[in-house]
Each structure stands twice: as C-alpha cells, then as structure tokens.
Figure 1 (spheres, helix red, strand yellow):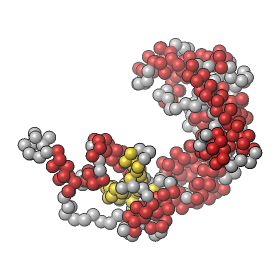
Figure 2: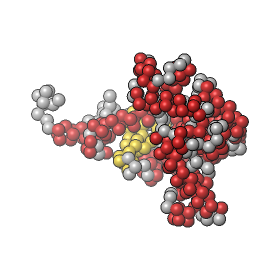
Figure 3: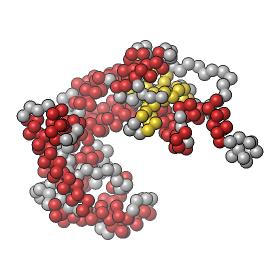
Figure 4: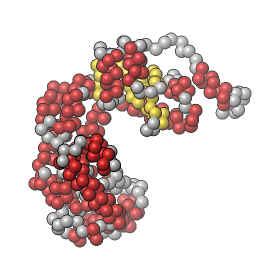
Length: 394
C-alpha cells in the first residue's frame, strides 16, 4: 500500500511509527464504568487482560497478564472507577474487592446463563443410569443394533464403567481423593465427577449441524419421506448447508429405532435429553414429548431442577434483584444446589447483573476484534504494537 501511495516507507518503519503513536489533542476523561476480561497470548499457556471504557466504548488499556497484583495496581491508579463488569472467575472479583471497594461489581450475564445450563446438564448426567433404563422399554441396549460410531462410544463407556466402579469402591473404603488419583492414574476432577454421578453418560455427542433442522426432519419423516438422500435434497432447498452423510446417518438411526419399537431413548446423550427438557419442550417432536413424559415419571428431581432453571432465566430478565434470595433458597434444595452456592458466594455482583444495564458484551466483542488483529500480525503482536492498533482512535 505504501508503494502505491509513493511513500518510501518499509514495513519496519511503518511498525515503528505505529508503535510510537501520536498524542491526542485532549486526554479522554477518566473511566467511570469499565469492563475487564482476559484474552489469550497463547491459548492454554499465557493470558493478558483487556480494559474497556463502557461509556465511551473504547479500549483504554491492555495488561500483560491476568495476575491479581497487576489488576490491583491498575485499579489503584484509577480510583474514580465506580462500576466494574467482569466474568465470574475469582481473580478479577478478588482484585476489585481489594483495590476498588468503592466500585460496584457486575457479573457477566452471558456467563450466568451458560453456567446455569451447564449445571442442569450435569444434573441430567448424574441421572443417566436411571434415565437409560426408563427410556429403553425393550430392555438393555443390544450392542449388535448400534451403528459403528455408537459402538465405539459403547465400548469406551464399558471401560469407563469399570474404572468408575473401582473409584466408588475406593471411596466407600474412606480413601481421600488425592490418594485415589495416585492409585487410578486419573485426575482429581474426574474422580469428583464420578463420585457426583456425572460420568455415566454412554453416548456423548457434540453440537450437530442438524440441531436447527430437527423439527423439519421430523415433519418430513412423519409425512413419509424415509430416504436419507431425499431428506438431504429437501433440506438443501430450504438452506441446509450440511453433508449428505449427516442426514443419511440420522435416517439410519431413525429406522433402527422404529424397528426396535422405541424412540431411541437407549442411545440418547445427556445433552439431547437436557435439550428436550428445556429449549425444545414446547416446540419439539413426538420423541421430545416421549422423553419428557418418561422423565416426569422416572426422575422427579430433574423436573424440580428444570423449574428452578426456568425461574432463574425469568429472574435474570425481570430486572428485579429482590427475587434473588428466594431463588437461592429454593435452588439449594435441588440438583442445582452447587450452582446456587456459587451464585450466593457472588451475590452482590449477580444482583447488579440483574438490576443494572451494564454487561460485559462490549468486552467480549472487543476481544474478538483483538483476536483478529493478532492473527493478522502472526508473531509480531507484542504488547506495545497490539495497544497501538486496538486503542487507535477511530
């Protein structure tokens, strides 16, 4: 570009000028409402922190790490800050409490919703043995009826169950988790999941490209279209961008389930059951209605957890923070008790997330922009150059 403009600058000269920057005509006002979050210098290894002025919608600083001392030093140099939007991790909250006790902390609403969904999914996973028996009216799963992909998961689940039983036996003997980790060779986090009943899900699946088309597929299937290729062609006309293989495998599983005389409950994942009980409960297929009916009869504790989850969503959207304490008291008696305890520990920030208009949405969007800039510069995205680019006035 500089050659086209007839400016004899090399790339290194351009970077030096950019790093040096130009002083603005007048200094911006001190920030009153900020959002702070981390970003990855190298994912899984090192992280920095980004600070955004939420009133001016401008990045005001990048910190080289996310250590508590670094955040505390920045906040003490900006005592005028009145509101701090942050995620629910303990690092930024503890730093804000120490260095800016005058500021009101606001928990990130998106992470609250995400944590609530994760807690409900964990509750479903803890009940999977009973759910699998209830959703399989033809008896135990016959491995011969499984597809190749499901058989791989089935074999892996058999190995996991042997290890799960060993961990449960050691726990019954009173052995501490640290000692069990040394003996079994698995992490303490995995052992905790086993002891909480969260590691019995045989068929685990990721998000599928068919999730958004489930209602259309069910309607076409009910109308008599049973050929995978034809289903794929009809979805493609409606805008589906997935492959023929995905639709054909769905049709194969559907035919098998009908042949076995059940709705496929034996091979359902915990995520599918959780989705059927929540987001697809009102608009789902006949299979969804069957799953909900079976769960209501077999595992009443999940129905109570779902009601608490729905009350949490309604509370977050109500802007009424007086509903928080009654919700915590109710949730503490359900399978979402651990999530409720976390909300109770961060009660003031969660209450502020309910009642105030501030959130970390701007910060998350700015982090996406920062990631794009880092990728453009490959390995040259050092702190000073990244600051120059991300904080450059529009």
